[in-house]
Image (cartoon, rainbow over all chains, first blue to last red; front, top):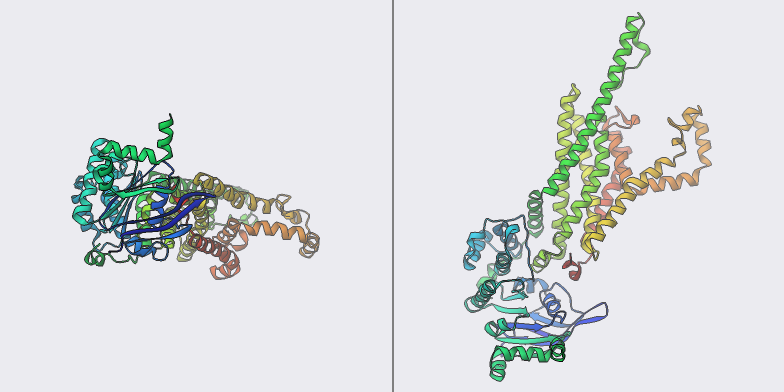
Length: 249
Length: 335
């Protein structure tokens, strides 16, 4: 059996005595589009911060692309791309200047050529010479995604990528994510609130509640059991405290 | 990721240069940096012009007195011609660098750290294959580079003006002195940049860090040197107590022995301020302090070596601290 692209083994994080992520264990296979669901404060972003080496776990271990996040952070960073929620970039620089900067930091051999390729891939070459300060949310998100794939990462982490986007922007992002997965074989790890996006995009999902993993399965298993998007929403609501509160109300 | 794709990626050997280059480009397009540099230049220019006007007034007074004496058929030897050391006109500019330059350095340090927090660009940088210290070194290099450039513009402009205004021009020795003062001014302002940068990077709220940095600026730049000056027993009467009372040097020493503890504390307060070291050094090198006017550069540098070491050790110590402190990602994501 091949080694999973991402493996979490009792990964734990706490802040000021409060456990944000509680002994999280799961495997995500290569080529998956993984949807990570959970209410606000469930610990999704904290999990991404640990997997992207931004934060050290309090205990437990994890590997990304076969490398330990604590003992081999540089090797992990070489193989990941990260798009935070509401990425803003540098307003005074153009999209191309922003991307060339991040390409250089990633060690891309020919930054200018690669930036042109990625802008072309994301169909936003027209943004290249415009300053990011005047961009809409959708444009920023597109450039944000571009900076994350400049170095052809094996794993792409997206933290609430559709937050604040209009329906057109959401569709555009969904199409891009699916292209990156199918054409370039990138494994996608996506935090989201949007159930509809999970059903349309993901190959497997997990639900986090108060730092604990309450559900993890392949999307086929979920849809086979519940049938459609609405059922997926019911699943999420039934598994999280927010959902249980909504039922009581 | 395929082996071919991975091979096309090399561990960037120069992230420090890349970050510094980006920061400088970003700052040069930011009106704030241009405005504060122009403000320092204007303040220094006003100080220079004010000094020149005062000197011109002294010369006019001397010329008038000389003309009166000569008209009365008396010798003009009785009155002393005002001494003209063109570099002394930089006194006001040095004081502006001491106060406003340090404040601008604090603002640049705050901006350098706070601008990355909140907009999450820091998270994008720290998920790249580079060490954390390289990020700090790149930011610090850019900040200090901006200060060096701004000070070079200000001092360069004033030097040119001085050359044109003084009539006698500036020699190589004068230019060397100004270059030394520039280098020390960069180290001096770097201290304040680093204090502000470290606080803004590590404190929970960058806005609180700015307040703390300005409290430190107030203490080091305005309070400590003033305490040192105003508590000096000899400064209690204009022109000096001992001079006004015609007390001979041996007697002065004898009297001051009675104030030994007081003097140790007073001098300690003064010595604790990097501003006082900067002032002592620059005033000596530029001949602003009368004792050093006309004195060759070599002996001045030897005498002021302690001040020079203090300034550079403070800057280097703060730089080492900035590199050594571990970054807290939880803090970095918050504005």
